[in-house]
Amino acid sequence: MSHETDEVSEAIACELRLMDPSVRMSRSFARELLDPEFVEVGASGRRWTCDEMLAALPDLDGAADDGPRYEPSKFAGVVLAPGLVHLTFETTMDGSRARRSSLWRKQGADATWRMYYHQATPIPPDSM
Image (cartoon, rainbow, N blue to C red; front, top):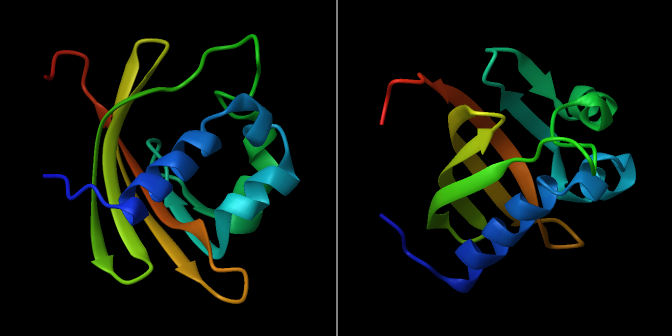
């Protein structure tokens, strides 16, 4: 289910920026997109804080221009409240697939969209 609004479109654009190798390689660019209270539960089950993610992001998959990249699909989004968008989508990278869920919020003096929470769940190879 998708309720495409300007807010959902903006959150999707930010999500796609976070998959861009040039953003993943730059802690300052990535910091603009991650909320200071950001938390991720990765496909491995590891829990990441904002500082941990910013430190590791340049070394994670998808950060090299000449390496594998995330191939996103099936974006859906809904505005949960003013300034709060929930996105769901799937990614493929090097044959591995994951279902993903992100919360994006817009608040504070700069009022820009920042990822507040992200979770990735691996999709088994034989699953649809």
